[in-house]
Length: 61
Image (cartoon, rainbow, N blue to C red; front, side, top):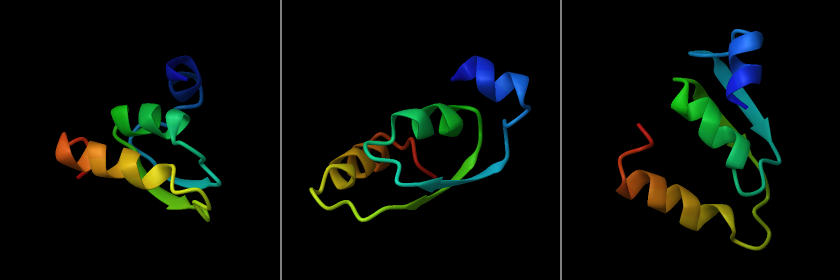
């Protein structure tokens, strides 16, 4: 992911994440200063614990 972000100059951009699932790729965008907007149903409640973890670790701003 880092190579793609660098190759396409995506660092520090706003990123719309449609159906991010567990947010693995989005983690890398965040690490590169991107502002993320997630759009997903989260039918099984899989993303909420991840977001809470990020917030607890002050990864999300």
